[in-house]
Image 1 (tube, rainbow, N blue to C red):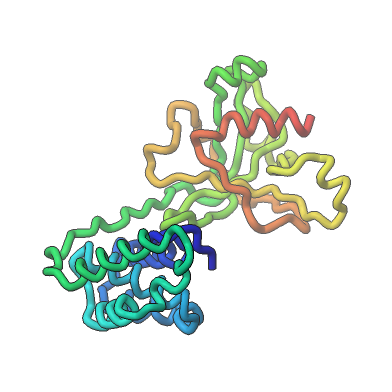
Image 2 (tube, rainbow, N blue to C red):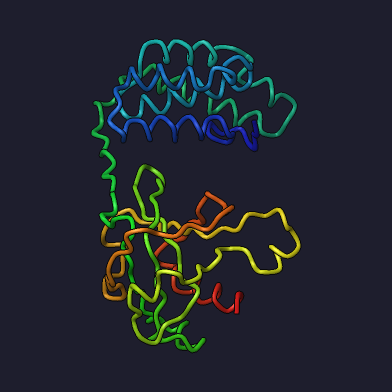
Length: 271
């Protein structure tokens, strides 16, 4: 794994361990559960001498700072902190003194009284309430739409599936219809309408005949507040959604914030 400096978190392993540990705390896992899981997950890295150092030092530092340092983790970290292996990589470099300072600081920290256990806010996971087959019109309302001649027009999409985005939000996956509307269409008008391919240009598909067409678009959101309800209008429901054959099953993801510009550029590209 990569190392780019003498700092405690100047390597891939340490940063990953910290992020993983804090993520699991926010999911409501107990300290003991997390340690058991994380040790299994990083078993291969722990077998490597350099990676093991980074693993245990980062884990001990992270646990100590949130008031949850377990004896096993402390013992492993202090074992490495007392070993010359912690600085071997830096001997003969101008970073040696910085590395020594990092080691001394962490050793003193782990041997000092641990702060009280901190309250870690739990994730508030969002699930979009739209149902499969729900059809919506999105009205273009931004300055970019004015510049490109789309202002006041609409794109229509239908929910066809769901996707999960970090840290566990359930978001809608839609098909965009390959048409820009001046007026909202009827549901009957859409039953056999063509879908808009996502992300790739027509040239990409022409050059790579084996490339499956991506039609699915995941609309990333972490709260109902992300959805621009002033631009969205519910048109009704399609009871049986048509699915293109041989399509790419992985959706392309975009945020609501960037949706309008993305769709306009996509439509221009495919015209």
